[in-house]
Length: 56
Length: 218
Image (cartoon, rainbow over all chains, first blue to last red; front, side):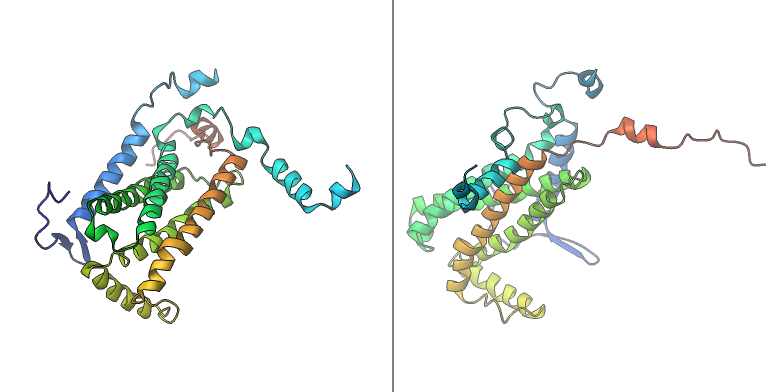
């Protein structure tokens, strides 16, 4: 990762009133939320039909 | 059943174990159709990360905590250990979110939920004791900050974050043992109770009282 990103400087922070968090942590949380939403809405391979179809 | 078999503790344990988890429940070859969703994948991804984490940790423990500073292969396994723990928490938190919004404690699954939640809580200090075992300035900085944090909440008499031997023992033995034990209990409970089904929306809608048609108030 150090080859991709220049890590030779102080960490950047998001600071808003009482909230303070490293940019890297904010990015990870946003990616986790995106993956969570994608896991709910993305179709699963091999799954055919709707819930009602399967029960019918 | 013979009298000897009745008195034997091994026979009693076997009967209870097989009664609670018969082989077809312990190692099922079919799952309900609702399990075919990406949100059900994050539990096994957490487990896969844990396996890599434990394996790379065993290699690092064999060579000692300073090995990764002086050899390329040591650095490689240290990186595997770091990124597997990053993925472990990444997947575990998404698994936790999914199960929380699914109310995974439904249907007598309270112990399944509790073992999972406690595993997360125990995994946090397990990872943090790894940060103070790095044998570098970063570890020294983290341990002094963590020492102040422990003192501020009144448990500083029990844990000395500046004692490397104590923190290293916690990191490579006590806390991983607790995490693995809890994960095993969690998986066995999932096998016993089955995977939690999603909410049945049609059933919930049919249970709601019929809405009165809106009338003009004036």
